[in-house]
Length: 125
Image (tube, rainbow, N blue to C red; front, top):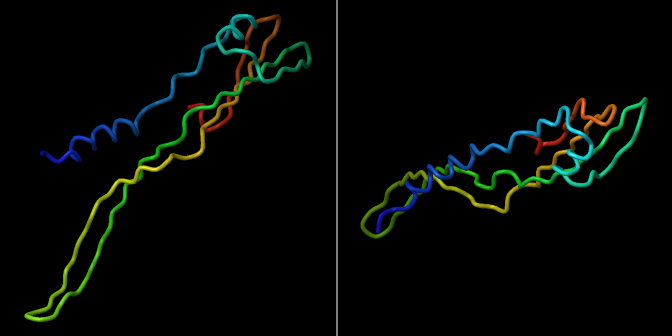
């Protein structure tokens, strides 16, 4: 049976490079088109003739693979001899992941069309 670790390392490296989907280019969309694409907004308000719609998105958690390197020194002895041993090791920890990444997007509408957007949060990319 061949060692599987050399086969897994490139896959882990590729997974770490994964990018979130690019943000929606919503400029010019109507409010109805925006709601059709993103769902019901979590909040809305109006100020100075403009309307603001807020959408919350929960993304996946952060990377859950953590590499580690270990070093060790030990002594052994008894009976016919004694000695000192040195060792190193490389490991990968597979945990449950970090906290979910969220993104809050607020779209600014004027005369019923999107004129701007602001995004906040680690999951916005």
